[in-house]
Structures are given as structure tokens and as C-alpha cells.
Image (cartoon, rainbow, N blue to C red; front, top):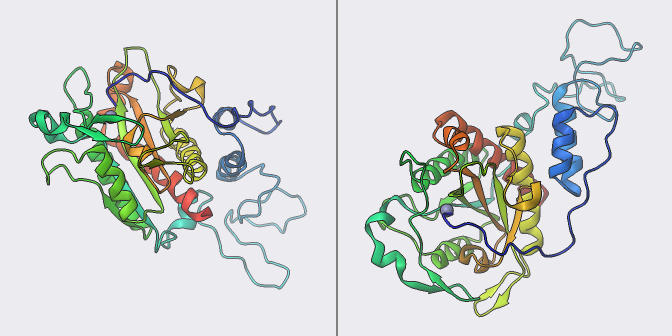
Length: 328
Ligand SMILES: [Zn+2]
């Protein structure tokens, strides 16, 4: 997204205030608690505590046991016997990857929308034409932004989309991209991007972007659809599930990448609600945008131009999507 966010609108209840500190929470968990409200909080805390392999008082997973009454064993991963005498399946890892390795997304459809298109730069007339987004008319598409050194948002978003597709397909999902940078050699227009998700009956759709704000503006944010009902736009059925999807993507993106929530929009939550995006207004399936960072900030640009970091970004996004789809 090249434009600064003007007139950010919040709908629905305000976010819960940060939860009070609990004795065993480390700094990461506290940071997540501040970011992630409501139902997701418990899930993230479970992930954070379970992932440590210790001190999780409520943990039911196999792993190192700290009770003095436990049978003596030197094997940290030995599975405890259950009441019926059978061994629980040993858990090779306490991370979410372990439980999702056998294709939990089979039958699920995910539409990935790489923001902009590298070809937009040479198709100004096509992308400048106005399209109807329900609430008003808007350009078909824009070129997007770039780093000061010229790495474009369109290349970034397409690269993250490819990485995300690979991860989701490995988990059994059917993945469709709104474009692959080639055919057509520009766009598609924002209304068509929404329609592709609708026609595919996507269980979740996500549009990948990086922002173009001022130096010093840092961090990621996830954009949620506002409730709009005008013309062809009616987001009322998707506002709730899209928020759920967005909260899970934000929490997992933060956890995996370490990228902080935006310091210039979203009041530190990493979540922003907007009613001016055709790709959200015209969606009939749960959909969010993610602005992974600010391409015009030198610190964020160093991350966004790193292939290793983009892999983390795709991983974090994928884990948010997996979390959402496993609950839906
Ligand atoms: Zn963009």
C-alpha cells in the first residue's frame, strides 16, 4: 500500500486492555498479550508456554516432566503412560508445526493476493481506470511502493506469496493466487482480486503488501474490513470471521518474525480497520490485508529485502491461517 492511512476507522468494541501480568509469563508472552485480544490470547499463550517445554502448569503434551513423583528417566521425550496403559504418541515438538504436518488443511481453499503487480509500472492507463468498489470508485490498481534502493513492493508481495503458497500446499490446502506477475501483465483490478476469492469460495483470503510510509515509521499491521453495505459491497457477514483471521495472522506474524506492530497506525495493536479498500469491501469470504513492514524505513527495508526474513514472514502468516482454518 503506497498511501498513508488517512481516517482510520475502528468498528465494534475497543480492544481489551493488556492482560495483567502473570508470574510465569516471559517478555514474549506479555508482548503477545498486549497485541492479541480475546480468544486468540489463550491460544498464543498456550503456544508460547508449550513451546518452552517447561513450567506450563496446564500443559497436557508429552515432554520433560518436572514432578518429583515422576518415574526416573533420562529421556526427555519419553511418553507418559495414560490411564488405560497405552502410550501417548510422543510429541516430537511442542510447536504448532508438529501437529500440522499431516495435512490439516486438506479440503480448505486459500486465496493469496499478491499486492500490485510488477507489470503495473508499464501499464499506467490500464491500472488508472476507475472501478466500482461499492462505497465509491477507485483506481483499478496502483504500482505500490518500493524501498529507497528500488526493491518494489510488487516483487516483495509476489515472493512472499510464493513462499506462503508452498507452505500451505505442504499442509494440504488448495491455494490460488490472484495473479502470478505474468498473465495479464498488470493488475488484476482490486474488484477482480476480490471476485477471485469469492468465486473460489475461499475459506480464507489474504492480500500481501508492504507499506510506503516515512522513515522512522516501523512495524507491521493487518487490515480488517470495516462493516460496509453500499452498492455491491456488503461486508457484514465477513467482518467477524475476518477479524478472527486477522488477529491470528497478526499474533503469529509477530511471534515468528519478531517484527513489532506498527508504531504509526493501529495504536500498537498491529490491527487497523478500513472501509476504503475494494479488495476487502467486495469480498464475500473472510479476508484481510497484511502490510508486512514499511519499505521506506531503513530498518524495515533491511528485513523486507532479506529472503530469509521473507520466509519467516510467510511462515508467520501461514500459521495464522492454519490456526484460523482449524477452528472454522
Ligand atoms: Zn500495497
